[in-house]
Length: 152
Image (tube, rainbow, N blue to C red; front, side, top):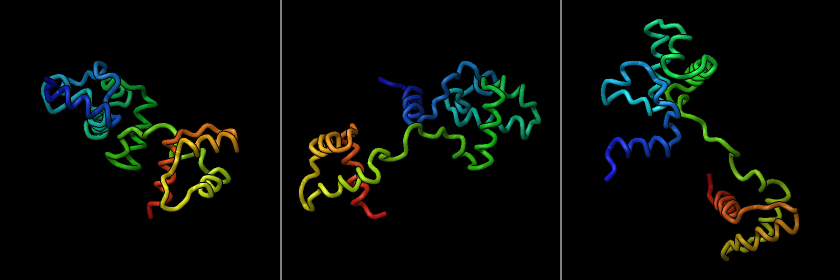
């Protein structure tokens, strides 16, 4: 049966905030108890910034103590200055939205849809490949159509 500690690691991983190098964190606070968790990337970054800002540690010493490079420290500092704690959460990588389904492709897709009928995403994917030479996953088509139907 998974422990609470295991479940926390699973949540951190799924949220993208699991520290990839918890063994590099040398601050004693992160080794002594339950509150400070070297696996929690957001908490580690925040404590690193606090150490420099409040305790007047040097950037070089803090970066070493928290297992990051100096450029990473400065990127973290800029992100925190811009967005607060939310700036310490890693950004999701990859394209934002259906980048293949724009312009002519999206117009073509919309012409193929019939109101009140199922989407037929696999068939639409084949038609887009034939018409434009693009491979578009059926799930991408379903998401694009759902976004289009949902008022914002």
